[in-house]
Length: 152
Image 1 (spheres, rainbow, N blue to C red):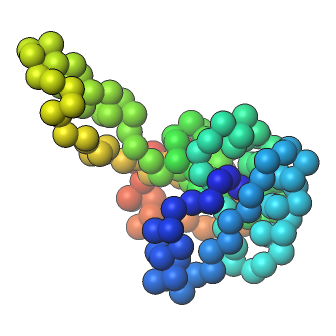
Image 2 (cartoon, helix red, strand yellow):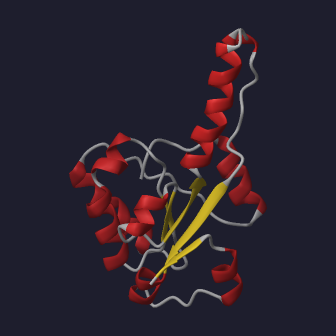
């Protein structure tokens, strides 16, 4: 649904004995064709990589995924709040808190080039139970307990 994802995703899919297929979509007209094609294979799912196209066309992508019974995962909490099945990604509020320590260090005289790159430290898992029900899926209790937020 977006640009090809890094090779690490292909490697991870291979280790889990899953088939990985990238659906390159550049125009809105390609969305329905791609989702219908992905949904035709049993046991499929949709990982939506964040980019300007997928953010702009979220409603179309998500509506088609749900209509075609295709579970999907996004990287930001707001997508699950707006109807996507699952989102898993960095907690941006925590990420901005981490950035504040960098600002402090720079204001105290540290050279930005000398500061290490930091990865997000906190991630949020959000599950939309209404969408799960619409897809005919049951979310296990263990998954519900792992989630930072459940949308009912």
